Length: 450
Ligand code: S3P
Image (tube, rainbow, N blue to C red; front, side, top):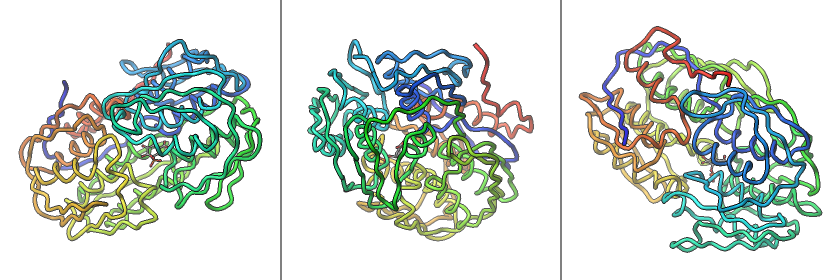
């Protein structure tokens, strides 16, 4: 089992890339797999989560030609031969690994097929709530059994059947649930509508539209007409702002540091992390470079300072839910109080991230109070090294590696293989940051032709 050993650094002055966006890579595999024609996808995230989704599509007969890969991890560029909405029955159960996104979106995709299939995952995923998708999909007529030891949990046995469109008001602001219903809606006759209680990431809508599918968005109401066929296209996945977030916080909290992250996704439903870190006092410049398949891509530059505490707004929570572990680290380094409430959803992520963040920060000397729906952190107390257990949660492992960059002594983060579920190359870049390397090549994430 691998671990990170981290100690404090004096400065961070670098420019580096982050790998492709996880949410968009899942969707690219699925939508290109459904499309009419051959799509070329570049900068695909070769993480375990996304490779499992690609594997699921391959199991349904989607042919993938690899053009480029990140050595040691997997494909980053490929041609995906779409099946024009006609998936083949998979030969056996499909492994979704650690990924809630993979399982929930695939369940939506498979519910309306003419075959049965089974989706399973690891221990963490087998404890996460699936009722949030089986309820709306059930209203559409889907037949899904939750076979897990825990009620309402995976494995999911999906008996493919004809679906009917619904109008569904999401009880929680979840892009995964919204996307599962919209993908199921592609396979029924008529208009499926999802109403979200707050804005959530809109990659499914944007990617479908860029593949030529009409998706109507009226405020918080999103509708799709069944029977449309996505048209294959060429597409480059932007860098993942949720991965960039770890370095954004590291640079922001070191006065005098300067970090540039290039070609990162700047979709406004994902950039609240930048607003929060700016509010905490760091200087962030965003430069829009291009738009790819409806997704803005740009460079960000972060200049560090002594941070100050802030309060996260209720509306910001869905936009930065994955960044809260590292925001909590920033809060521990900042002067004053940071309040994170209305974030109960953290309890049903890869771990209960309220508990894992609170335990980890306390072990390092942070002053933090736990609430049912969040936490309050009084920053400024010096952090000291500790041994932190990731509990197999990639974002906990990476957030505490960042905390270790500010602690006295050597912090050990245990059980860090999980980082490969979202951020291949993190360990390499962490080593370069620890070495305070001025050589840009040390921060590279090589993509080589195969
Ligand atoms: C995701 C949506 C979010 C996020 C997850 C990825 C997606 O989950 O936490 O990492 O790709 O749709 P919820 O929509 O369930 O909050």
